[in-house]
Structure formats: C-alpha cells, structure tokens
Length: 501
Image 1 (cartoon, rainbow, N blue to C red):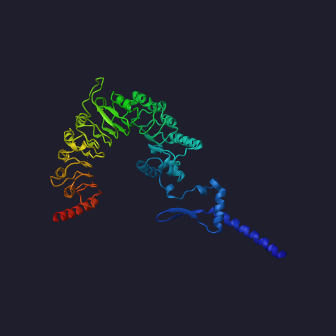
Image 2 (tube, one colour):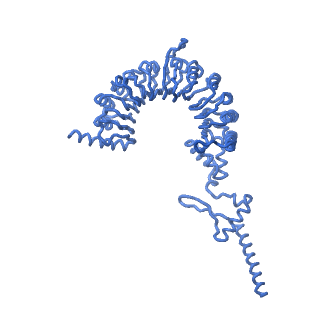
Image 3 (cartoon, rainbow, N blue to C red):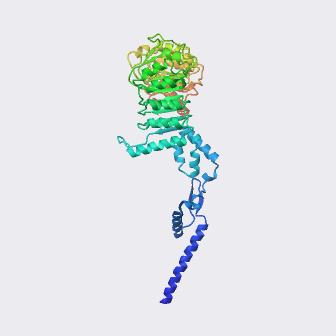
C-alpha cells in the first residue's frame, strides 16, 4: 500500500512538472497564429483541448501587461498610416465623419489614432439619439449626451468647416458656444428641426467664427430677436441662407431687401402657412450677386415697389436658378415673372410648378437663351387654369437646343398641340440634349410618344403615367436607357396594331 501510495504521489508530482513545462513552453511560443481566407481574416489559438483552456486562463491573468496580447498580426498594423488615412478620407467624403469615424475608431488602437486626425472631421452631422416614441430622455442620458458632444467638439472638431445638428431640443446654446470656442474655421452651420436657439448663442458663433458663410435654420425655433440682430451684425459675410416660413420671415426678408446681406448667393424659403411678402425690387437692388432663389411651398406675394419708395434694381444678372413651385393657390403672373427675371440671361433652371397664371407665351419671352431645366407641372387643378393652357409650341421652339429636363405633367394642352410641340424637339431628326421628359396626366398620344422616343437619343427618364391616349400597359415611369428602348419597341408595335385596326 505504501509503495502504491508513494507511486501515486510520485505520479502526481510528475504530472504537475509536465504541466509546468508545458506552460513554460506555451509562454515562449506565440499564442495566436494568423488565419487568412479568401473572404476574411481572423485569429485563433494554436493549441487545442486542455491546452487551450490553459492559454485562455493565462491570457486573462496576464491582462494588458502581456506583450503577446497587444501584438497585432492583422493587415491593419502592417498597412502604412498614410494609406489608412486616405481610405478613411474617402469614407468621410461620401458618408460624413459621423458615425463612420466613430465606428472605425473601435477596431484597433492604430485605427483609433488615425480616425482622431482633426483633418478628417471637416464635415460633421449629429442627429438626436434614438429613443422610443413619446418617451422622454432621462436626465442621466441627457448629461451623457452633453458630455459626449462637448468632448467631440473640443478634441476632434478644431478643423471642422461644415457642422449640422438635427432634431435637437436640448443643449443647443451649449453646443453653439462650444463651436464658437473651438471651431474657428466653421463656414457652414445647419440647425434642422431644433429648438431653443437663443440670441447669445447664435451671436457667439457669428463673433468667433469669422468664416461663417452659410446658415440653415429650417424648421428651427429661434428667438424672435436672434435673426434680426445676427443679420445686422454679421449679415455682410453670409453667402447662403435657408429659412422656413414663420412669424419672423417677413421681417427677415425686409432686412435682406434693405441691404443686410449684400454678398448673398443663395436664398431658400420653404414651407409655411402665412403669406410671404417679398420685396423683389429691394432684393434686385441689394442682393445683385444672388445665384439661386427658391421660394417654394408658400403663398407668395411679390412686390416690386416699396411703400417708402425704395430703389429697384436692374435685375438678377447672376441668377441661374429660380424656383417658385407650390401646390397652393399661386398669384404669380406673367408680369411678375418678367419683372423678376429681367436681364437674367444666365438662367438655367426655372421651376414654376403650380403657377397656373403663368402662360407659355409669357415664359417664352424671358431673356434667358439657354434654359436647361423647365418644370411647369400642375399639382392643383383650378377652373382658371384651363384658360391659360395653350401655345405649348412656343416653349419647345425657344429652347429645344438646350433643354435637358422638361416637365409638362397635368397640363391640359390639346392632343394636336402637344403632338406638334413634341415634334419640334426632334424636327432635325435627332435630339441629343433632352434627358428627362415628364408627360404624366397629359393628352399625349402613343404615336407622339413613339416619335419623341425614337428621336431623343439621350433620354433616360420618361413619365407616361395617367396618359389616357397611351396604349394600355405602357402608362408608367421608365428609368434608364434600356427601359426607354423597351418602351419604344412596345409603343411601335402597339401603334402599328392600332393603325391596322
């Protein structure tokens, strides 16, 4: 018994020594080997069974002090930082810095170091944290959000030029003051669907960000005195201004028409119920460099002479886009359009959807010679509209050489007149300019649609939905050149069948 017990104890000692030797041998060896497949790359232990359990225990005990744990065998550590930075730059250019860089920084230490480069954080858009509908954010989460945005601005956004904040109801003054303190290169600020924008916070950005040239406050609640004070002090540096109609819109537009923003290039006023009065003569006089003017989805009233006898400018000589699109009752007439666009020889885009008082004859008399996009579609039908819908040929004859997009949806041109107008587009046999044609809800015939399709070689978008005179089965939207050619073949066969009948 003694001998057997001694042998048992001896055997146990030998086993322990063998385990120690095995552990020491494993400590000297590499714990992980690189496994590369065609589609992925991963790391796994180079030991199996009981030895694998031993390795896992040693890894947990060594922690961060072990050089074997921090050693990275992946391609990310071998690739030069310059190449990783270039790849990150391509991602940021397409998707923005947030959340792309935040996710890339979680891959490894090297990627985190590269993702922290301030020159990658030049275009940042921050949205509200997601939460359940009708559920308030807890104070603890609000505090965490505040600390996170402060740390982001202080440590990452020293070179930011374009910053956007969407759907924020808290901490707006804090964010704006942090931007003014740590982002001197800011050129564009967007506050979309935000609230509680104070005068002091907005003014701090204007004082400490001298390069700020674009301001977007659409659907944002701003103090009543914030915008007038801001435009009075910093309006001379603004190039782009985006607004949503509210009780302050008329006063802001009056400031623009009195010379508060002489360098303005783009003005957009979108959505809203109150009537908007625009002193167009003042804008022509004090915003002569305006290039884009969008007054959309509003009840617009244009005035060209102020009650105080203000000046009337010569016209928007640099304007290349005008949009007055609306689905509401529009009071814009031919006279208004002619006054607004006098001397606008460089106009390229004209959007008059819903302006049923504007006639094709009035449009064709505009001074622009190379109009590229013309939108005249109707989305509201009135009894007055039928009286003005005639002479479509004057439009296609004037700009057939330059039109790339033409929208005639819902217009009540006669079948013969529409056929003649479309024939003008291809009167020389081919048209290599027109790319988009919208005829939804018109009286265009199948033969006229076939002729315009066969002549317009560059056409990639065609809308024939709700066209009563088009054969059944072809009343839809066609996108892409292949789809257009299929429509042409089907139209040709169907029209031939109808002619034989």
